Image: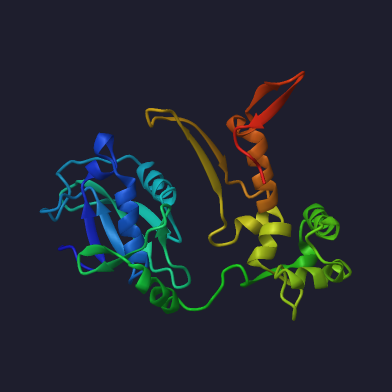
Length: 277
């Protein structure tokens, strides 16, 4: 099959060894997502229609590919499966679904669009039009099937306390009852008792967050001066809301707590390597 606006193919070299370039693969996924969606077969050379005879790929590779691309791009809806061609060669088929609501982008902030068999960069003058084509649905405001009365009581009480004691919240807002407060911050639907996706993220139970489509997770990766990965932290069990996740990151990653003390007179001044605001 020839490469076109909905199909591409890559050699296994694109995802393995020193020639691996998941950033380039993520760019193509972004381009498909912002167009009609598409398929990328990984394990088939450019001028071939089938993978090498007898080629084998591991069962873990589909999940690895999806996770790696997720580290290099935002707004993608992906799935991957291992396939066997008629000659017995194995390859990975990557499905990229057109995202109707979000303009996909690489983590470096670049936008692409699939045009013919090329992934073309989107200029600043075209980003607005691309966003308009996606529609006006906001994921955060989408109503769920979960009632706020079935939310996690501890998370609900903690959030209400934070809002009512914050010096950034006006007295007018602080005086609202709980449901009015949740409506004001788009955590619930005003006309019903149901939480929005944003509400489930902040006050929902772990099982409710886990059932949301596109629930955000956080990965922090540490590299040394040679570009080699040395450590990795992941927050993907849906037990924490966004506020708790951010606080846990600051407490968990040791490098973000390091500081240097400089002598000044009879006392010292401590400078944190990373300032928290």
